[in-house]
Image (tube, rainbow over all chains, first blue to last red; front, side, top):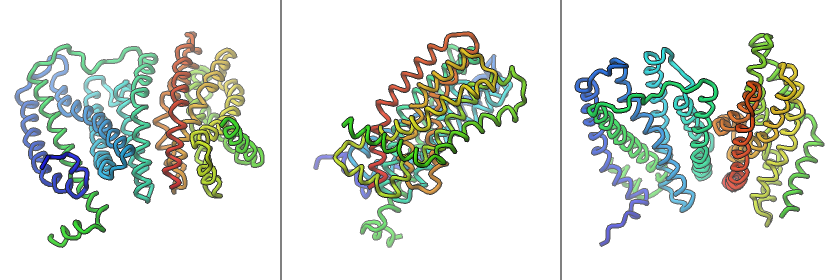
Length: 245
Length: 222
């Protein structure tokens, strides 16, 4: 029998697959987080310009990456769902949104914590901070739209459309904010001023970035399992599954 | 096809002309929001001149959102929206016509009120000209993008606030370039760069938004 990836486009088979994958990603995320934090706090040297405060970078950068990356994945699933009308795609983008919003919020928060010792202010209207804030607003808007529509089919498709419009608009927003920022304040402090990071710092950051990936995958899969159960509750296989418990 | 577009626009203009109360509410909202700012931040002419472009533009965004929540609502309630979507004419033209009508009804008056408010904020005459030009290019963007939001939130509870939540982040480029053009005119730099970018954003919106709004309408109706 040929292995077919399309088999897992059915919520029933995907439910089982997700169940098998979750422990791997969850444990992977846990172990990598511990490892990454050890590198970050004990092995990475103190930065000669920024002192100890720079260590926020180890959380801040992975969170900021993930907040943007999850939005792209959501846009991908939305496009797939609208094009081929696959149920699972909409469930995936729905399961990803809260994780993306959490990462966006985390990147704003750690950005503020980092900004205070570095720039002397909790908040600077820097291009990156501002566009992360707008990305966070987009996540909130999408989740608000989902929760406002009771009809499932309409809510899925309306949300997907909004995500895609946002995906077209995000680069434009980023460049307009960047341009606005340089016009109003002159070039601001760049986050990545040091041209070469110590390689151990880079390794720590990458380990934590992978940990953030694993965490995002594990939470999204857990959430998608819940959504599958909720939506397929009238089917036979879910009834059988629930009887077993 | 052009005939259908013109019919949609004419119908909305006629409806607005017969119901002047709705129309005036939105214009007075704009005037009042702008007039609240000097009361809030103090009457120093120098400061008022500095904040005028931003205040004017933010008030324009809010005023357009206020009227946008009604863009399809009436037609949806009496069933005529469904009939128009069932007709053989392409729904894109319906969405485009609705947005253009909204611009004519609500965008153009903002353009005409803005100079008076500009005088209240002590803007020089040539800067007022730039303000009007930026609103002329920018308000179609507000109507077109807002049409997408209005179609997505059609018939939902709390639709107006939800519409604001969805669409306000998407308005950011228009706000930045529009207010930026007036700002740079105030600072003595040329507003051309900002106006060109605003026009580019307007063209892009015109190319994408009607299609998205049409599919949003189909999603909301079915």
